[in-house]
Length: 455
Image (cartoon, rainbow, N blue to C red):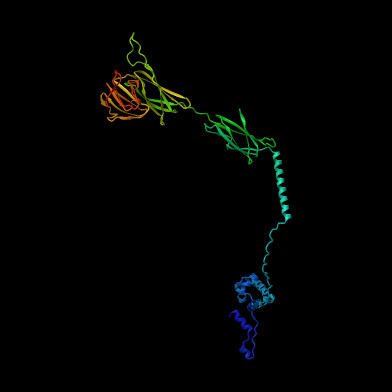
């Protein structure tokens, strides 16, 4: 049977009993009283929960008499008292009936649990004109006091100085370094002085943040710099002077090394194109030169005229390759010669080696050099096509030299006579025609060169 049905039976009149003259009026139970009171108040359990701050499930348990759903006797008494006050019932009477219905022999003092009052919202901070003025005055006074303190400290203390670049006081730089930028921190607007022995000091003004930088000149060896700061307002110099050293090493000048592989000492050649080759280090080029020593023939007999020395050939500059090698032909006339090869370093250091050679021409020795352009040539040695050139001939690049040796004659056809130079048995003949004009020349010493019609 529900609480509602119990209440109806409690407050209703059994008509059948009334007809017999009997009236039923039993006293309502506590759950029935609570339910009836809430109905009279016209609220539901959820409205009662919001008003009393007691959960609806606990209020429902009180109205059903299901006290096992409640957290304990102490809480139950507190809930009953607050709920009774909310419903307009006498809390002491409600608690007494609860104890009687529970069958308690001794009444316990009621535990009053008053609902927690709802806290009123905090008042926001309000600014009055007087409060704003007072705050502004306080800020001004504090700022002025700080300014006075800074000025007192500034006039009382000399400026400080610090060097941030380089990070150490002793620095070694590359041997090619001629300038270095010093950087640091000091008093804003201070004058930084960088003194170095034997030179006028460098001076620079610090920025508004106190930073400063100055490029200084470096000499080879150890460079000393004394860095200090001066306050322009007080004229005070920093108590500390930062001394640092920057060392520029002296150049290690190496003498070039030189090796001559060709020609070998005392070698004899049957033509004047002497091969010169070797290796060099710490040098970009070598210079090959020749000195006439004497005739390659038998000594002159008394009374005979002394042979006239041949002209000294011009020196030849030969570049050194990346791997250190060099090579070139060197044209010499008949006789005994001393060939000197000299290697020079960029710093002016030199190394030289000499080789003594003998040039004794036999037969026909012809060197063909193209200068000023390219030229096509075709060559007959002793009347036969030269295999190295071929029947179709070949094109010689500008600056290139080819040498040929025969027993009796050498014949050369060139597509451009003006850029083709000849050296016969060590004697330079130069060009024999005009540029762009094809010609054929026969060399058969002791006869002079002869132009022919061979093609």
